Length: 261
Image (cartoon, rainbow, N blue to C red; front, side, top):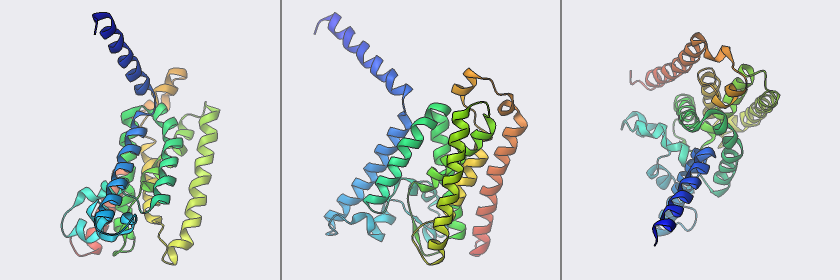
């Protein structure tokens, strides 16, 4: 390969990488990781004679990181507050959440930036899993990206209050608020009668998103129209304190409730 062709190939790779960096990079990484976990669960099920239903098997779910209270509290497997975000029960569950992540996350990642988006996704997922740990059925397995997705809904609602100068953000904020209310109303009767929807995980995710929406800013929007309120350190401190408050309260309540304090 000649020097000129080699330089052209390097230039093409660099250009493609810059295009990827400007796109929803973290969204694609999260989707690939989540689908990879699901594929692993399915293959494990096949090897164990479960057919294609490995993601429905309780032992396989636990093996791949589903939230199971006894293992968190008694075996101190605290990493299970993060891992359930990437574990899904059934193909329908996976497809629904990944489509939601793609269509919602690609725009939010553009607004917040790659690493802010990733931090929000993981932190709100942890908040949701803490709520599930504290208030849901003690013997239930919990898994899915819904805790993080509801956190993204919550972020949009808060951003709509911060960036009032942008009609598009305002419209999206109202849509997300309506979506949160409808989903929680739908999940409430299902949860009361022993359904599989993790209502408490969703609530925790929303609270995390609403609080962190006060902490983060959107560099993209502020290039167009500087917003002083989000730069106010007091607002950011309040948002961070609300988030930490709910983290501490849920942990303390969980340990006290199960006699581990």
